[in-house]
Amino acid sequence: MVFGKKQPESFLGVDIGAGGIKIVELKKTKGRPQLWTYGVANKQLDIHVDTQEMPEIQEVMENNIEKKKEVLTNSLNQFASDSRVIEYGGLLKELITQAKVTTNVATASLPVSYIFHALVTLPPVERRDLPHHIQAKIKKMIPQAIEDMQVVFQQVPDPLAEKQKYYKYLVTAAPKKLVSFYSAIFQHAGLQLKELETEAFALTRSLVGLDTSVSMIVDIGAERTNFFIVDQGLPMTHRSIQLGGRVIDKILAEKLGIDESQAKQIKQDVSLFQDDELDAELFRPVLRPVMKEIEYSFDLFLRQSGNEAKKPEKIILTGGSAVFPVFTKLIEESFPLRVFVGDPWARVVYQQGLKKALDAMGPRMSVSIGLAMRNIV
Image (tube, rainbow, N blue to C red):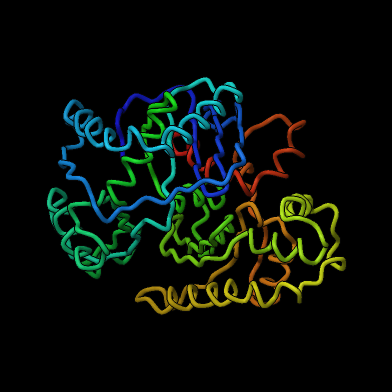
């Protein structure tokens, strides 16, 4: 979703999630993303939006900027008095002030739990007719009326496409009401929301980059764990389960006789633990759904037409709880693949004196880094 074509000097990525707000500002230096500033606001947020009763928002052409502004303004008005918009917008405004952000233009992510994500196959059609054919293809697959969804798509690289006379498209659809809700937050914060994209693409950009092999990103959030299979540098599948870091916090708190906030801090400070100090078996029953979901997702992907001969190479962990060593240990025991915590800073230039601090918070910043990199790499 693009509201303007002029590229700012700096690029701000904003990740609003259940565990708070994360921001990263990057500048393009000699063709590479350079860290300018970053910030985190730790707070439990309710990012759920009722998307069933959708407002009527007129579709406009991509090049009709004035009409687009009018439609955006009208759609934002419904959220003007939403207490969460005021609260989260104020929190974001305070965060960008404290971090001394230098741009007022931002790219943000939409929570994947609201996003429809599918791979569709079509015969050759005229480019101008593609939106019609894509929407017709997914119309019966999505849970809401197609008119209430913002639909974007991109062609998937396939060397056999010309020969087999078909093309694959990765389709993403988001409720327009959700787009309006996020836009209202940014407007309240005094930011221009230039683009919105799903967490899947941001994570792929920061953790996978140009690698074309088959891999899986396991994003362990506060409330949910999301699973993305990435192939040819694109997130092809997405699945999610309602199990996140707070469950781990609870188990640690009970085991160590402390409160959950202390348990969360201990979980993040992994230097306090050695492998033999943590009883992985204590967590195996709780994390079993994670292992089952990884297995099921790979199985589903490899049974799809054209994927039968592909071989997954790695599992990349990210999210606030990814640094908890039990996750890596149990997944390594279950799958004959390379398993590691992803480093979203690997493609970013920064002062080496910051390395220790950045490494500690890296898994939490993967989405915001990927968002800021969108117009650089």
